[in-house]
Length: 383
Ligand SMILES: Cc1cc2nc3c(=O)[nH]c(=O)nc-3n(C[C@H](O)[C@H](O)[C@H](O)COP(=O)(O)OP(=O)(O)OC[C@H]3O[C@@H](n4cnc5c(N)ncnc54)[C@H](O)[C@@H]3O)c2cc1C
Image 1 (cartoon, rainbow, N blue to C red):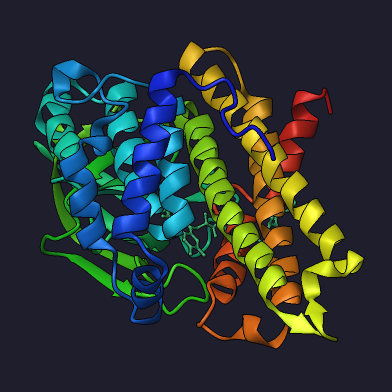
Image 2: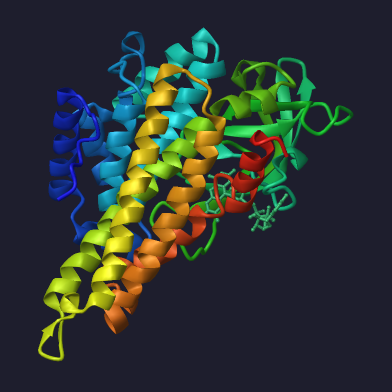
């Protein structure tokens, strides 16, 4: 048996076990399957999470949170992703795109207005960066915000912006100085996406079918200057300060989901009889499971090493890129071999493996693709 405590403190182990019990009770496989198959967001489970006080885990006590850090937030996101990846994504959007953005570059008035609501689970956030012509090349965004007295007028279109339809506010990345070089002249706004001029369409995607992702069009949307998030024309720099936290969040989530896929495949290998024996008695299947276990274990070692570095405030850009590549690819390999172990039954929603096989695919693309991560790692190596 692997020792799964990883140098967690006694309090962190208690937290992990509590979240694990919560998932068993409130996020059973039937619930996760229903959310995915019927394309409904896991809002009941999210509201129950809020009652546990876990949404404010990394928010300072002065704003109604628990004042803990990324290890604790990671524990919560990992265990929730074991039940349903997209429930964990909802928490990530609130805790990182919402709370961490406000804490890093929001004004005191913005922090006081929103952080207590996020901690109480009464406020959902999302991130609106990607555009039809600006994906990996994010600095190429064209959505314009033009000053008009105390307001900015926003026009443009975003794509693949997850859960904007559920969000109270979205971090909207705009171009405020079109004459400046690409990485300059960008500004962030904390925008209510449910206002005149905003059109939100739900996209039909292979993955993320519960919470979903949107195409969002902004036509002459008026946003007050008090909703500027951070400094005018300094948006790119602000985005970069949160990048490691985003990469950590994706990594810890895929680790929880990969663990669930591994457990599912292990149980199936013990139960499924062929040639008069459990298929898990065949060495070919055992070796697949051993490789999957190695990948999940390494993922977990990497994510909590990164969490501790984030909490200590030490530089960890290379580690964040390496962790994102490794864990996303590990989840993909685990889900792929899981499909092989479950054979034809893997194709049906009776088992969670087909959901893993769909959900894992975006993780090598979103939040910085594996190619972009490798380029970033190589750059840090001096290339
Ligand atoms: C389900 C889903 C949810 C999402 N959620 C959000 C969200 O909430 N908010 C948001 O803003 N965005 C979101 N995204 C967008 C996601 O971050 C982008 O899809 C991602 O950044 C890649 O951009 P792209 O799809 O335009 O691909 P492209 O940038 O066109 O890339 C296509 C391929 O080319 C490769 N490539 C591109 N540039 C290079 C390079 N320089 N070197 C080597 N290879 C390169 C890529 O790695 C990839 O393999 C989501 C996407 C999906 C599908």
